[in-house]
Structures are given as structure tokens and as C-alpha cells.
Image 1 (cartoon, rainbow, N blue to C red):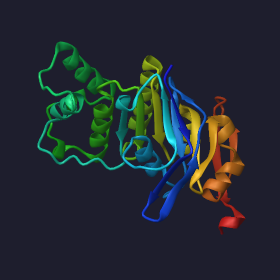
Image 2 (image 1 turned 120 degrees about the vertical axis):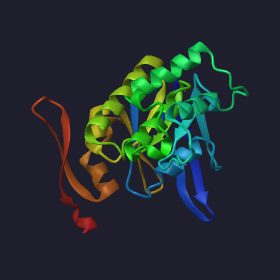
Image 3 (image 1 turned 30 degrees about the vertical axis):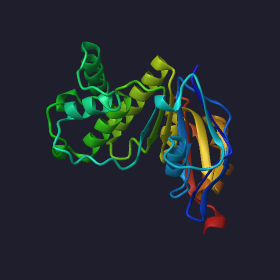
Image 4 (image 1 turned 90 degrees about the horizontal axis):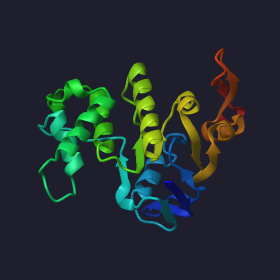
Length: 253
């Protein structure tokens, strides 16, 4: 069983503290976890801290994995190199291995991840020729091709159309179930979170305000605290929870 837990994580830029004592219980793999919070709440900072790109107090604890098993897909991914999609994914697979010869198994892994995320038809296209949504799908494929056990993705659906958002989240859920991996996604669409993510981490005021099963974590009181809006969670005609926004909280006006 793979899990990830945070114990008193801190992070700062210069003298400004961004995260204070961010702590979670163990987050189990096998299903998607959402990281939610307002703009500039520190979600990207938390990801960078977990990924070892920033220093600070506290500890990141893995069970069934190590830091080497972690892959982080940032919100902004630079893709200006004159490479094809296929070459780009191969590069991600071989990075850090010390060699460039590809086995049949590795070639199969590249083919599988391109197919999984619906971009096999783009394999021979150059990166600069791709749309923003296509580049985002390639970034996701690069992140998953080595089949990591811990995955952090910062707004992985932000450039995708509605169908591709659905397709990518379904594929990520399938990957989590197949591998038992911990997958944490920073998402803004709370209805996407309710539909796809078993666990939610809520970040605000420089600390983690809630971490637990999504239906229990995403309460109207928490949404008011995070975003300054009044909201309701109701059941749609198929019995699925939906968040309805009523307007700004009086305190936010």
C-alpha cells in the first residue's frame, strides 16, 4: 500500500512564510486526491515542497515508495524544443537512467501512455505545432510514462476542453486503481473534485484546513472560508453531489 503523509511542513519565500505547519493523515493510493484552495493559497508551493524543490521544516513521509518514485507536473510546462511528441515522452522515460537504448518493454510503455491519454495520433508531430490542450496532455503522458507511485499534478485539466477533462480524469482514476499510486491534483472545479476525487485536501490561511473524504471535507462552511462564497451541495437526478454557488459571503463583500 502506497501512502503519503505530511508532518508540520513549512515553506517560505524570503521572509514571507507561505506554509505553516501543514499536516495531513496518511493519504492512501488507489484513488485520486484533490488539493483545493483559492488563487495564491500556496498549492504550487506545497507541491514543490513535497517534491523536494524547496526546503523547510517538517517532513514528507512515504509508505511503499521513496522520493525517487515521485513525479511532479507543474502548472507551467515549457515545451519549445524541436522534438516530436514520441521523442518527448521517450526523453521523460529515460531521464536519469544513464542510458538511451530502449527495450521492447519501454517502447510498449510509451505506446501505452500515448494511447491512454488519447494522443497516439500526435506521436510524430513537433511540440511547437500543438495546441495548449495537446501540450498539456503530452505533459501528463511524460509524467506517467515511468509508472511512478506518487504523482503531483498542478491544474492538469486547465487547458483541456470539457470532453478531454472527462477523459483525462477517468484515465488518471484508472491508473490509480491499477497501480495503487497516490495521485494528488490541484483543481479549481469543485464539481470535478466531487465527481472524481475520493479525498480532498483544503489549503487556506497558510495551512491545511481539512483533509479527508471529499463529501466530508467540502462543506459549505469550508467553502465560505476558502473562497468567500455561499454554496450548497445537492444531489442531481442521478444521485451525484453537485455544488451550487449562491453568491459572495457577506464577509467577502
